[in-house]
Length: 209
Image (cartoon, rainbow, N blue to C red; front, side, top):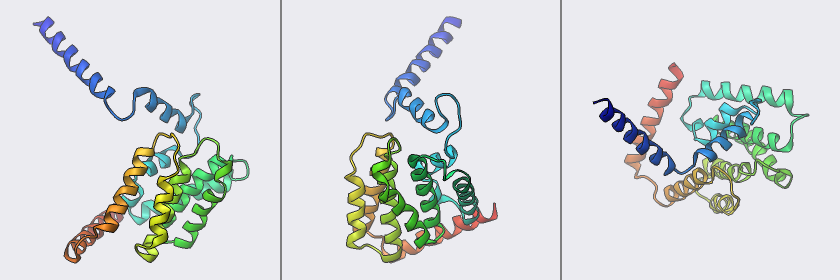
């Protein structure tokens, strides 16, 4: 019986390992991602929790109080470390700040942060994923202000064309393709009304937390 239990445990473990091996990122890749956030020597880098929240698209799901708290954290870090930070870290901070400001409806301030990334892209050495993400966020800012315009679509395609090998290219491409699909297939007015009501209810619940 013990042998049968051990064999079952071995089988389940083997299946789990095989399933893990078939995921988008290998274990080695995930370790590299972790090291990117906390450093190979365990040293804390730039706001890793907010980086992870951004790259997994958590900010649009957050209420205004949580967004304001996140913005305060980014602002405090920028104030304390901007002068000594590398261009890569400044670009990452600008992306975080621009995204959060956009979610809070502060479009001119958000646009200025995202433009900073684009203007300094040639000096960025390692955080290259920040550049196309900033382009995506800039396009979505313009969409918020203008609707679907030629420059919104062009900026999304500009982001997609920034071809580099970085860990989060899949998430970015999914966001871009989803945005372009939604532009081409907007919800019917009655469906949009229901979506807006659901979003308002979710935001109200988050504000109460």
